[in-house]
Each structure stands twice: as structure tokens, then as C-alpha cells.
Length: 213
Image (cartoon, rainbow, N blue to C red; front, side, top):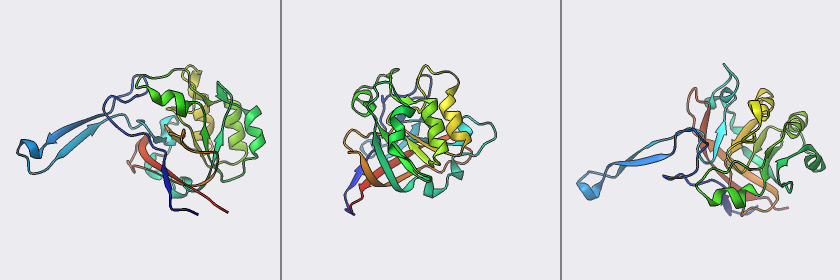
């Protein structure tokens, strides 16, 4: 095991891409030393589903658990980065070959990491998890799934079916990862969302460290 951590988080900044209709990220200065203040002080406002973030079951399941209920082991430990070549979606036909197992944490690297994060304009056509792949993830007992754009569901797919399949089965979701500089393989994952009580989601910082034999 090396000590080289790889940051796979999207930086939060004014003007960054956000899901259409969500509150944009805004950081403003409320106190500045340059203006005579005792210190530099900022405030932020944003959707909780900004940049690299996690979804709680409450996001789509009424009365379900909020972000504060997430067990640490869901996002701390061994993880697999799997590269997807399908140009439209993560589908069962491509996923079956990886023989995922119970308790796996899986991060999907797609063309999203290269193409979608190049612009601050929302990209409607991004790689998402198709419902058949989501059901397979549940059947295999995967505990955590990560994707490299803002949703596990496609922009035009009705009913947020993939969200419902995963969240209803207790699968934790990380969205908004940046994996362009990460090779497929086995890693140690640390992804810690803010512990916001009663929240449907939370921004997170995520890093990987390559596992060596």
C-alpha cells in the first residue's frame, strides 16, 4: 500500500455546474482583513447535491433515513474502480463480467469524467446506471455505488427508477466523482459526506489510494 492519495472530488466554486433547477453554489465574503475585518470569513449557499456528494434514502423515499444515518463503513474501505465503455449507459450486459460480490464498493469510470466536467454547462447526455444494471448491483449485494456525473439516473429517464432501486435496497450512492486520472483497479476509498441531520444528501470529499499486492 502506498501513501499516495488521489483526490476524486470536484472542487466547489462559484459558477460550477449544477443539476437544472437546483440552487447553485455561491460563496460570498462576509468579512475581509483587506477591508478592516478581524479575519477573513465566508458564507456559502447551495443545493446539498452539489459537485461530489452523496444521496440519502430520504432523497427519494418518503420517511426514510437522512444523511446522518450513513454508516462509516459504507464509504471507507476497499473499493473497485470499474471502467465502462458503453457510450450511453452502464448496462447489465457489460457489468456481468466483473463478478461483483456482497459488500463491494464500486465506482464507475465513464466518458463523463473526461467530457462532462470540462464545462460549467449542464450536460444532458451523460452515462448513467440503467435499471437492469441497478437491479444487478442489488442482487449482488453491493453496498455502495459511485458515478462520475451528477446522477445515477439519466436526465431524461422517467421516475428516477435507478435511484429507487438502489436506495430501497440500502445501497449508498456517491455522485459527482472525477475519475479521469484514475486507472481501473482496486483501491482504498475514503468518502465522508457532511453529517447533516435530516438531509436528503450532502457534499463530500472523496479520495482513493491504490492497493498493492
